[in-house]
Image (cartoon, rainbow, N blue to C red; front, side, top):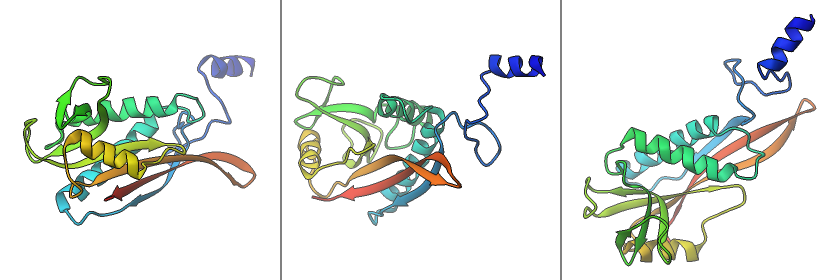
Length: 192
């Protein structure tokens, strides 16, 4: 008995750690309980939104414990890495985590620039027209009308280009007297 217990402790086994439907440990990230996706009416954009929501779900599963302070940063990094690896048509490797100023792409994080999470273009070049922009939010953070205007101004696009928020909300649900972390993923479209 003692050797089994010491082996379990050495392997990092925690009996209170949540398990997924397949019985595997979920790493404390909990479970994804709901996805709500608003539609733009543009099949190409809507398909990319659904794909990006799936990527965010995958990033959630590999980002670890949602209770740590830097969870949003880790989720953004994991999501960006997964999207770049997919090399999605219209987004590619360069349409992820870009900065813009006065409609031009600039060095990421340049002072005074507007940073985006994902930009979809009507082609693979930086001169191709922008079709949509996605912004990932976690916790209580939300896109405001002012931020949507700032994104559009920085990218040099009009109100015909949707700015789509993919929001990951964390919370604690109590079921059968056991607290479990639940994660909801929403995709909201902002046309302000």
